[in-house]
Length: 274
Image 1 (cartoon, rainbow, N blue to C red):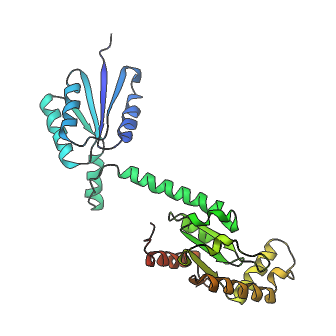
Image 2 (tube, rainbow, N blue to C red):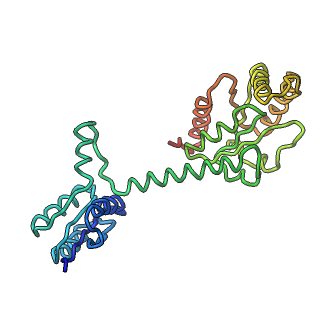
C-alpha cells in the first residue's frame, strides 16, 4: 500500500496560485494518491510552526507563495531544520524580475485580489454605462459619478464607455428640443453633469456622413444646418440652467475629452480613476 503523500499549500494570501501549480504538477503523477492541505493567510511565525509540525509527521512537501520577507525566511529555516522539502513557487520569478527588469517588488500579500477588485469595478461600470445610455432609466442618474449631456453625435456614448473602463459610473442624456429632460436631471448636483457641445459646421459634417452610412438622403432634417443650430441653442439653455461645466468636442478625440472630464472630477475631489 502506498504511503500517504501530502503537499501543504501555504500562502500569505488565499493560496490559489500555489494550489493550481501543485495540481498541475500532481497531474503528471497519479494525483489521486496526493493530498493537498491548505494554510492560507499566514501572518505570523506561529502559523508556520503549525504547518511544520504537521508536515514532519509524514511524507510531505510544503509548496508556498509567501512574499513577506521575514515569513519566507522563517519558513525556509524551519523546513531546513526539520528536513522538510519546502518549495518557493513565487520568489524565484520575482528575483528574475528584479535582475532583468531592475524593478523592486512591493512584497505585499493579496495584491492580486486588489487587482481583481479593480477589474470587477470596471466591469460593473461598463454595465452601468450600457444600462443608462441614451437617457434610459433616468431614476438611475443619482448613482452616476458623471452624467454627460448633449445633442446627438457629440460622442456621449463613446465617452461613457471609455470612462467606464476607468471605473466610473457614467450615464448620458441626449438633449432634443421636442423632448423635455427628465426631472431627475435637474435634481443632480451641478458638478455631476458635463455638457458636450460642438461647432455647427463640424456637426453638420458628422451627421451628413452618418446619413450616408445609413443609406438615407442627405436632405433629412437631421443634418439640416438650421435644425442643428436650433438643437445647439436648446442644449446651451439647458446647460446654463444646470450650471454645469461644458466641453467643446469639435476637434477632440474621445481620449482628449475624457482627460478633461477626469480633470473636472479631480478638481471636485473625486480623484482620477486608473
